Length: 124
Image (cartoon, rainbow, N blue to C red):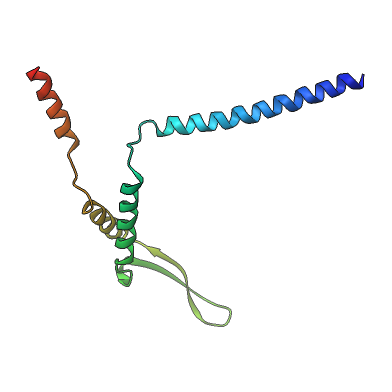
């Protein structure tokens, strides 16, 4: 009887291990599926993008108080404090980042590639 119990426990343990491995495989395949239609870029290009974003943020003027919405409150000591600070004009920051990134690359219009292919197909 104890041999049967040990066999069942070993079987359950083996199946649990297999389930764990299958779950890891499933997550890996789900990530592969999610990444299937993403464009591929090299790590060098990604480093250029990261550097451009960092430089754009570092050089952005966060001192413009018109870009913020502030909510004030009184502290227990009677001190005025800024309870929340919201950056309301995120468009300018986003535009600075996009501009800096775009300056790092020669951007090719996707439609020109299709048109070239279409013209080549007509010639053939």
